[in-house]
Amino acid sequence: MTPLDGQLMAVEEIAGHLCRGGAALLPTDTLPALACTPSSAAQIWTLKQRPQDKPLILMAAEVSDLLDLTTVIAREDARPLADRYWPGPLTLVLPAEGTLTNHLNPGQDTLGMRIPACAVTRSLLARCGPLATTSANRSGATPSCSAEQAAAAFPALPLLAPLPWPQPSGLASTVLKWISPGCWQTLRQGAVMIPNGTS
Image (cartoon, rainbow, N blue to C red; front, top):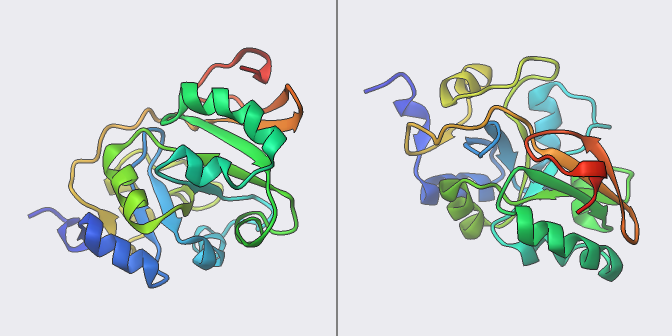
């Protein structure tokens, strides 16, 4: 037994918890994540004590789950980057409209998207669908780098089993924003090095 055993849930159990509107802690290839379904995303800002003008990232298991949400022209530019870097530590910020954008990036017309290089979390995403995510730490605090640190930050939330989680890189994802055909802006330089913010 470990102190975290009472918080652990297997993929099927945690998928049910998320689909009922709960939040959970998940491993990724970069940093542990705080996650919930997009329709329940408002709780993440409350849990993190985070300003609502800081958007959440939509994580999914399949490229089509994400790129189908954007415009045709942005999708054409994003496809080569997705093919090269997904699953992996690259977040693409693409034009999007509708309910998902309202939930994850209120008042804006873009959505950050990523497929994590973490098999157990992709298995969960395949089961319950794309999830709203952010790093598993209180706003302004040092990012959690382990299940133990994530659980200490959010002791009331379940963790995806099994432990130990795959070792994360400890580096946040690189964030690229699509500006116009062939033009990308680097919003955050992270684990992926992409010269000049382009492919």
